[in-house]
Image (cartoon, rainbow, N blue to C red; front, side, top):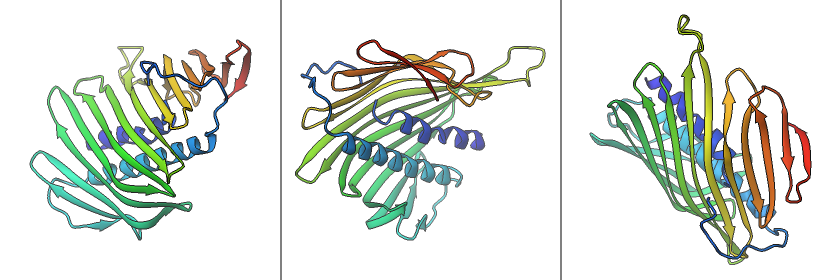
Length: 280
């Protein structure tokens, strides 16, 4: 069970990076019809989201292999300190970067990430991770907010899992500009067989759904919605089906991965209805 938990925890990086900028259109605020002017800042948000989620994933994978007993503070890098406090119900972990901690590739982080995770074992095994950012600065960007990730594993022959993440982060560049980024997405992982007589001949695939939005203080808006579930199969290195609609202000691009055939071809449609066949 421990190994399965760690394997599915590794989906955190993929899913978070894949949907780091994807929310519904319930917000009726006016959206600029002009091209966005915050592409650079938006890329910085994607990088910050990816790095923060990668660190949380790595710490979770490490801490989940430790039996529930007290352990002293330990170092994951020369400037990052991890401390744990364990109770009967959950484990609280504090990731302390101190000031100007270079985590990798010139990326500098200050502040703390406080995370807790609890394991529930019943008809469905669940691991719930909650984490919050305390005085976090990524490069020159102040990042704040909270996120919750839930791993659930069916305790039956299918071993199906569900990976649900909700996040609400804010980003600020000094007194210049700020942004909010919220996500809500689910990835289901399924093992199944086409032949009951050979149950060891398993097929593994994932199905992802979700939405997310990033809004800047100058009015720029980036959003994405998976309108048809994205399906990835273990036997194919490319996404085999699904549709994602992305927007930058009012400009819309639809990416259709196809009907389930394993190939590197997708169809991209812009706001004017022009279609382009692209190679993944």
